[in-house]
Length: 206
Ligand SMILES: Nc1ncnc2c1ncn2[C@@H]1O[C@H](COP(=O)(O)OP(=O)(O)OP(=O)(O)O)[C@@H](O)[C@H]1O
Ligand SMILES: [Mg+2]
Image (cartoon, rainbow, N blue to C red; front, side, top):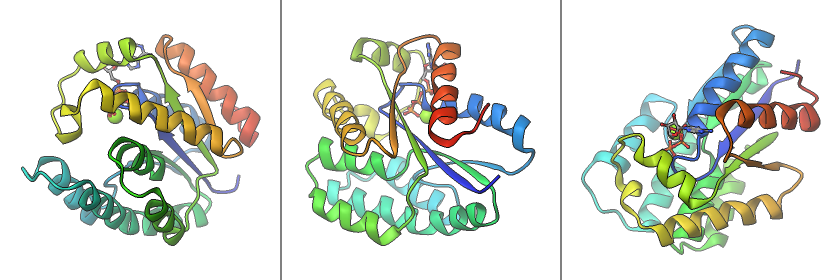
């Protein structure tokens, strides 16, 4: 099989990490060791250091600062991702450039043209992007079920709604790359929807 780059996107608590673990297990059974599961911001020591600074450094960075920091981390991370895909491996990434557009662009009003320019400069496009979507009542309940406290967790419901709308707009604008997945059901059901998307879009049965 050729190398593949798949990204998992969506708002907080929608179930991205849960589904990434499940999908990785299914794909590892198919492809052996050649599955890299990673996340953004982060994924390399330098990029993880930027993540730590952003989320837990105690700074109240401006939205533009976060945009540039997350792209700085991405510039490091894609060196690893590119090498993995070029050697025929499969990459599953928990958040990628759509999160920057949804959070900093749609959520916080950073210029979307600037974000698009940074995306072009990175020049690494996913083969498939799974965008998980669920109603606010469901994501709020899931977020309450776990206890993570980082800067973005503290934003309010209106911000979460702008981010979710941003993700839906991205899915509508790039239907050839993105699949909007209804993540409101049980984990097994969402996993089946994701498996179907991989089969339909990439011809990968899992
Ligand atoms: N389909 C589901 N049904 C019910 N609960 C779920 C489902 N998917 C995930 N959960 C639970 O919801 C919580 C959030 O899930 P998860 O951590 O996977 O979300 P996430 O999108 O990765 O969140 P974050 O953006 O904060 O990383 C967890 O407690 C998880 O066990
Ligand atoms: Mg997660």
